[in-house]
Amino acid sequence: MGSIDHDSASAANGQRAYEVEENVLGHSHHLRVICIGAGASGLDLAYKMERHLKSFELHIYEKNPELGGTWFENTYPGCACDIPAHIYEYEWAPKPDWSQFYVSQPEILQYFRDTAKTFNLEKYIKFTSEVVEARWDEDKGQWAVKILDRLTGEVLTDWCHFFINGGGFLKYSNWQWPEISGLHSFQGSLLHSASWDKNVDLKGRRVAVIGNGSSGIQLVTAIQPVATHLTTFVRNPTWIATTLGQDFAGPNGANFDYTDEQKREFVEHPEKLVAYRKAIEANLNGGFESQAMAKENLTQMMQARLGKGNALADRLIPSFGVGCRRPTPGVGYLEALTEKNVRVVFDSISKVVPQGIELATGEVIELDAIVCATGFNVSWKPRFPVIGRNSIDMRDQWSLRPTAYLSLAVPNFPNYILYMGPNAPLSHGSALPSIEHITKYVIKLLCKVQTEGYKSVVPTQQALDDFINHADTFLARTVWNAKCRSWLKGGKEDGPALVHPGSRLHWFHMLMNPRWEDWEWTTKNRNRFAYLGNGFTTMETEDKDRAWYFGNPDQGYESIIN
Image 1 (cartoon, helix red, strand yellow):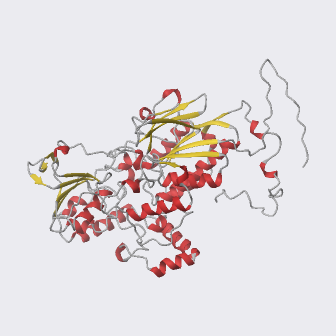
Image 2 (cartoon, rainbow, N blue to C red):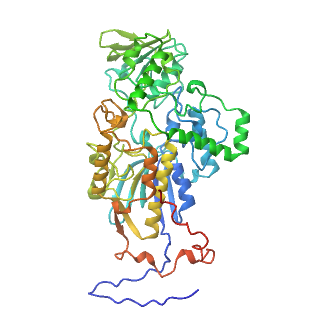
Image 3 (cartoon, rainbow, N blue to C red):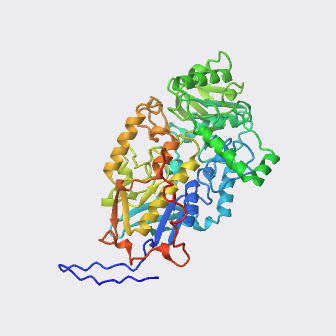
């Protein structure tokens, strides 16, 4: 190996002279990362950091005693995923032996448990540890993070270069009881879908379900066969859609069990499993019907499932466009509403009394159990103080509206990343591929910071403003802008839609080549080229191919899409 001579620089104007760092180009400076949540995002981050980064520490703080995120917390009867199982999994951890085409909560939770165990990811996780504050230190270029030990009550302080919120949309927001007068005066069983009490048995009881979102629809379908009587309170009409991936499902989009032979074939022939998964995924990414055709088809389908001439159709079928609220497949839901032991109530609730629910009409419905399927506080505001530059609290910055650059980062909060933030593809199919694309972006960002001598990085306000301007202008011409109350709008009827302005493939494409020019970069050294180091590179160590650029003329063009 040849040598390069280095001349010592001399001081000028009384300032300390610039000195060459004795590192090779590509050297990875140590990076300490804290991530909130050991759900789908946290596990993917751990797997990818371990395989693609050097010299790092990762600490995942999980408030629950177990991993799994929303699939650990949501255990209500009928809780399931409406995405086909074979595409609700990591690309790097395919499961050939899913029991059914659509699977329920216990099997999904077990998948995440098994994946973490197989790849030894639990070593990064600290359970029963809840982040209660994060504060940016500009001088140090670090976050000070306070963590509550939920077993002892002790509050500890940790630190990191990068603070990543992998809590996800539902965990990022808090579940909440509905604001109904007298709710906690009820003398029967009071339950919430997001905090289910498994000790309560609803068999043979008079049950009310408040809410007809995704969880409410699943609950009604599951409870109807076992309850003596079921009353379901419907505030808003909603589109009950055909199942996702129904071209691969059973007759009329029904679920089905995979046979032992099918599972064995997927195990013995992985290429067939890949082809099957790609076909389902491509189907979900396919073209869409016109709005008029979609409304006509779903209207006819809902009318047929409710039964000819059923007056419920006039109250349940929306006037707003398909997709303004996320359509729910709801297999068996409409049929359950027509059963003799079910009453659908559209009247307003006046209050809850000890024996049941009193309607605005004065009628009291006597009950043994009330189930609140009323969702979450979807304001997006963090449930704890996140204090950025100049002591700005993210909850204050987001007081009017939550906004994030490409859904990933927020001005005034350096070295902060969030998964599935506002304007992410929240209504665009399986979340797992979206999470993996976010992680890929994050890994590129962390690698750049590690190897190019950066202290901090934050998106500019102008970049965020331009992105939101484009998103709002685009979404104004879509069904998401129609008048309907939706969590995609933060629970408002007329609020801006907080979804990606385009298809899911459009979002993937957008993230492939990061626009680093949209970020403000602060270097550790006043000379931005200090990372060039001593003139050598990690590519010329003894164990590397020193002619790697020979033999593959197309190498380096992979990210260009025509």
